[in-house]
Length: 366
Image (cartoon, rainbow, N blue to C red; front, top):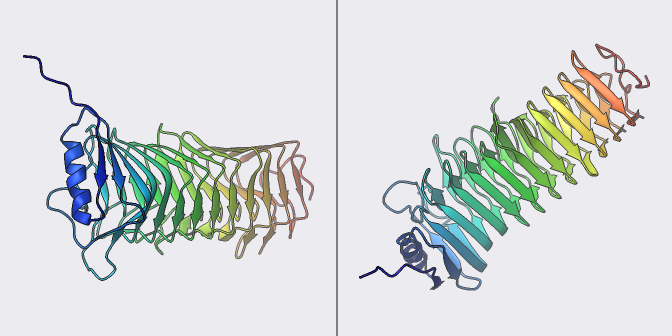
């Protein structure tokens, strides 16, 4: 007798929290096949407690390839419960591969030292989000909505709003694994008022895993540490055709870079505010800009409202204009770093464009 191989299944999930729990358990029972769960149209799946076992989640751990089609459904934590839990946990070194489509995840919370308010990825796991809304999720120690612990995270056409972490990094997303975001919006995400609360929207820290942000908008995000919208401390980060506007931080109102960062293709960094330095960008690593506009940013107590550079910066075909600071220079303040300007305009910053800098910025007007 030869065993009949298991085939992928499509499971219709009734509008019931228990039905979704059962459906995930059924899908996990065939770990070598990819199953699809179709949620009830416009249903709200409300949870009041975590299920038994590891994961601190309201739903079973994802240990196999599962796609969930939301059909405008919402998965939420009951606002009247004091119980804390996330929704999805992908444990490391399993066959966990989760795809979410057309779904909202709201009001999840994990306290104490826990990370990833709504979703937690472990080493070697994969999560893909398409047209997903994550709002009002909270974590105790990083990744208000999502923590990517050396997994692979792919996000497209999604929306992150009002997510927060009480300590640690990444008001919406904290990542040490490969992370790609396309066509998404991050609004009013934040980190707590502590020194290491970096990355109001996204914090990415990795020796090798890349971060790629494309055609996305970051606005109204806040960090009490570094990087109102984005904090990068990785060897490979790229921002392409993004809008980074009206974010706020102690240092690096728009972006704080401590790794290698490239911005290009009409990326705009505008109207961001820092208390001490780097209203638009604070660079302590390697920064390459191409076709990037850094305009109308502000520093309230220091210098470098456009860029504050203490690393290596090469600016190509870019513009730094109309930035304001408490002290000069407001445009680009080079403080012990290296700056190369290629077809880049720095003008109409107040007070001053690049002077005084040490070393001086060659080819920059005073």
